Image (cartoon, rainbow over all chains, first blue to last red; front, side, top):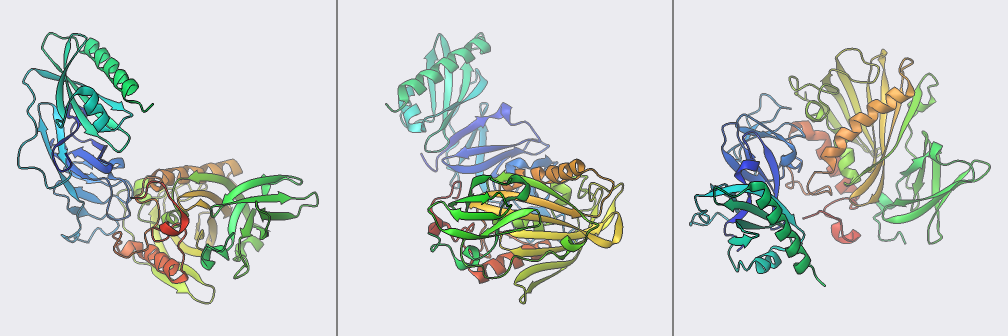
Length: 208
Length: 294
């Protein structure tokens, strides 16, 4: 699946003006949204002195590094270097960017250039629930859910129709982004069901 | 046991602990340069140290700290002349553990450009972030890196400051893991306060930092002075533990310096010339596995 779309979070957990760390396939990334709501995915490392940009803060349409206040625009280009207020940063000064898309309450990313196809569709009647961390590699989680090669799988659990998006974090960990189908279902009870599912996967998938 | 260490690190002096933390008759084990060292003080007050597998190592006690050299000392312990001035007060801050290369700690200490963002409203303000041009030199006679004519606007430059000042700084790298600065003293503008950061590199990406302050400040309590320094250093630690890679890259294209980073550029060049590899990206293969390095 490397190079294809991978889920990295729920749209609701990334409000405007927020920067958050994301680990995808072992790569440290930062997802951030401008004050106007434009979503971006950058390498989580300021090119200046290697500081993780997810520790920075969003100011207007720029992501500002915590260490020296270097400002990075939505296109990845450096907007300002505060230590040298007169200097116009060279165009070559950029943070690597990655493809990111939103669909049906999920945020999808691709480490390559981004596939031509859009990320998988989600049904119209879903509501985002939560992201659960699982101490198992994604292929073990996929096998436990019978997901095959798909990143998005629907699962019936304790009477709830859960839509599960599987994110490979690194060689040992994954994240499960959980959405709920059906307008009548109780989100709190569905969350309990999702938590029970997570515990079962960890128990069954744990190496003997 | 120390043959695999490059001479520039093996034959240099490194801090082990504070003098005050080693009572007469006491002994303690510490990690230095990926080796276990036992340091002891006898009943008469004399300090000695040895590698845990037996070999004795050279020690010195000065500046409120105990130093060791794992090889043959290439030079005497660096001199800090201000320790001879008896109207100064010494405050030692003790050890702070940092999950980063000690070389990254030195570079952070040399850096003025981060003051407004990491030490907001203490050592800098966001409205005045400019780093004016300063001078940098590698002093060959003493084998040290110096940055001079450094200036920076500070709202609260020291524990004793009541108001903002244009601080003047001199920075001095006295060893690969030893750095100090001389800074405008709020109490007496004709003299400098001395602040030092002595680093014990435990592993390539794990450090213990010992800060000291040698100031002309009769008003502040020792607790207030130490608290101020600890506040500053704990703010730095957030940055230091989140730089990637944790080790310092010496390759010129690995990171992107500007004119404000001239001291960091000179420090890296000096480390490279001396053949320092411990704590660098380039030395990774020679010193076993380090965590968090891509």
